[in-house]
Image (cartoon, rainbow over all chains, first blue to last red; front, side):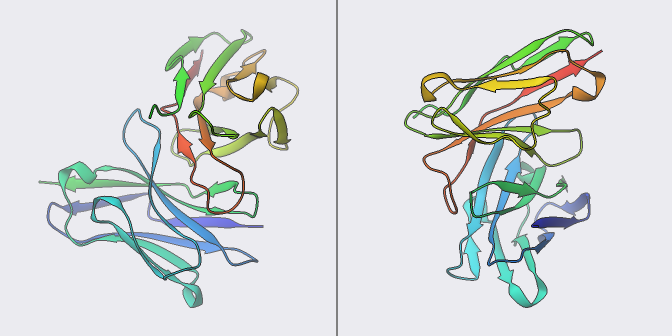
Amino acid sequence: AQSVTQLGSHVSVSEGALVLLRCNYSSSVPPYLFWYVQYPNQGLQLLLKYTSAATLVKGINGFEAEFKKSETSFHLTKPSAHMSDAAEYFCAVSDFTGKLIFGQGTTLQVKP
Amino acid sequence: EAGVVQSPRYKIIEKKQPVAFWCNPISGHNTLYWYRQNLGQGPELLIRYENEEAVDDSQLPKDRFSAERLKGVDSTLKIQPAELGDSAVYLCASSSQQGLGYEQYFGPGTRLTVT
């Protein structure tokens, strides 16, 4: 069975600081991995996805993630946090049908 | 292009009452998903449709939940009767096809509160 673990339910950074949100996965087959963002009272928006091509994936809004098979990780980073990045972030793994299995989510707080 | 539309956005009901949620997916999207998101958790799949056929309803509590997707477009998710534990956000998503790599587009969700 596939699963995702997000380390840290809350992350707080200062504006301009590095953002690092951690995600580890478990999958018996080569995984497809996703990061979604959810702003208050809105649906989920895809930030980026890994589909077995390049291990460093660039997404929207300056975010990127690196797939590391040896560490079963897919951490999300952004070099410089903006106030508008404050939101809930979800890591997800997809099974062969396209069904998404989500992690518990990480709330990102950005302090001025 | 219009996104996934859901209504109502908010619903408050008393326990044991029925409730229904409606979803209109992106035009042309054959695959439709209903997810439930409990407070502080990630979404969990309830049911997946391929056109009008429910191809994965293994996580749908069938004693009180039902869903339909008539004509393979709009979909309705119903709870009857609602319980306190059903309080959650119900998200609808659609994709052009099922399978790996096809992006799911999410609606804003319906926040259900059962009192």
